Image (cartoon, rainbow over all chains, first blue to last red; front, side, top):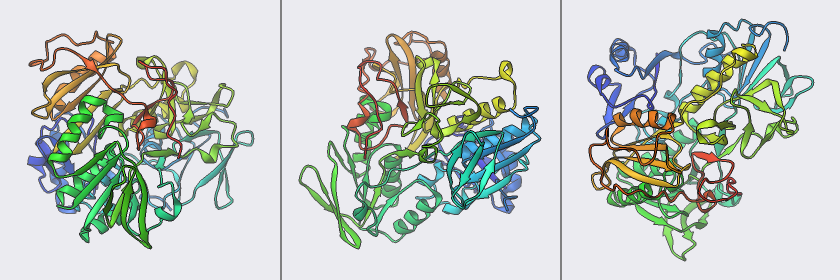
Amino acid sequence: MNIVVDLNRCQGYAQCAFLAPRVFTMHGEEALSYAPAVPEDQQEHVLRAAAACPVQAILVGEEAGADAG
Amino acid sequence: MQGEPREGRIVVVGASLAGLRAAEALRDAGFVGSLTLIGEEPQPPYDRPPLSKQVLLGKVSADRTGLPQRRRVDAQWRLGVRAIGLDPIGKEVLLADGEKVPFDRLLIATGTRARPWPKPAEATLDGVFTLRTGEDAGRLAERLDAGPERVLVIGAGFTGSEIASACRERGLAVTVAERGPAPLVGALGGTLGALAAKLQRAHGVDLRCGVTVTELEGDGRLTGARFSDGSRIDADVAVVALGAVRNTEWLAESGLAAGPRGVTCDAGCRAFDMYGIVTDDVFAAGDVARFPHPLFEYQLLSLEHWGNAVAQAEVAAHNMVNPGPRRRPHLTVPAFWSSQFGLNIKSVGVPTFSDQVVIAQGSLKDARLVAVYGYRGRVTAAVSVNQAKALEYYERLIETAAPFPPAPGAADRIESPVPVPSDVPDPKTLSHGPTVALTGHLPDRRLTLVQPAR
């Protein structure tokens, strides 16, 4: 599972950093830092974080081009 | 156009953010024909913003920033091969491996590449880097891991400043050389440029403005650099952050309006040919496109922004599979972000399209503020520093061409109620490119804006 956060939308509510702290961390007071490739054991947490984001800035999907030949 | 717009062959050249999002949007819009994505880099689409932040800090490995795909795009991926030409009559894309890929409709999303150091012998010294691709970021992160004595960053635009920030966070000695009067000045103007300079120095950056690097020294390995003011430093790593070059050379013989400033297209992402006639079957999106924006007096804008790549790709895809009257314009208000030196900087609108600026909320002293930019009495941009939640309000002001300076209301207090000149410099005086290029003229002075020739 891979994620990308639309940081234009992100307003630093930090819900994701509470729900999946191994994937999302605050960097400074309001900038978000995250790991784009989600470890297997964090996927549930990340899905919860994506659902909880007040501005729906977290996009989840399989890594693009997985079907690339 | 062959047959129904939802059938036929679509080729997307450029397999990065814009290309991927366009492919997804084409399928979302009901395109059932054949879809081919051509990418120069061997790996599938990945996200670039983390490269100058998480990756340089060593928190994420450079090969782990792959972009998520949100639906099946059912495409033929041609990765690791460069497009070298376009035959507009035969409707074929020519690839470096000799293959010709036929299309009914084409999307050009070839983006930009890092502007290299202009002297090839110096550019190939061991220790000299640029930062644009995942491979670049991986190599640079590895070198930073090894603990260099001093890193020289050439150019203090967003990329250069983020690199300097990451180096300082790692405790490395950093010198930043900027030809303009301050960091970020090309994108944000004089007021926030001065704040950025203060922050860099407070974080221990050896910041040198108003100078250029005249020579990178070394014999096989980089050992130091000389500056235009006569000074020199020892450095074992140099990162060239001089902005980007648009990947349009492959279109030179195509008859399209494509050149160093990008591929000119209309508001619906349809590319123009060299005579200014709009094409029916060639579209452009992302960093490589330049398009007229009504909020900024229909000046042609080139935006090197993540959000623009996404929004413009979606509009291009929609228009590729819909007949004329159902087509949509790309009118998104430009927006971007940066994080550096512990601060979250976000922008909406076009700060370089301004003659004045006012600190509408917060203060420069606290490095927590919203700066609002105006042009001839209307709001054209806002930039927040650690105050991101306020930006949506200003975005509305930009969209409605609200009067500048903005009335107090959302403002908690006004530190400097009197607007001051925005001091947006001519890009020719910068060592890097601004992230928004107005390819007409600056609004408050008549200047021809060109990407600095190197």
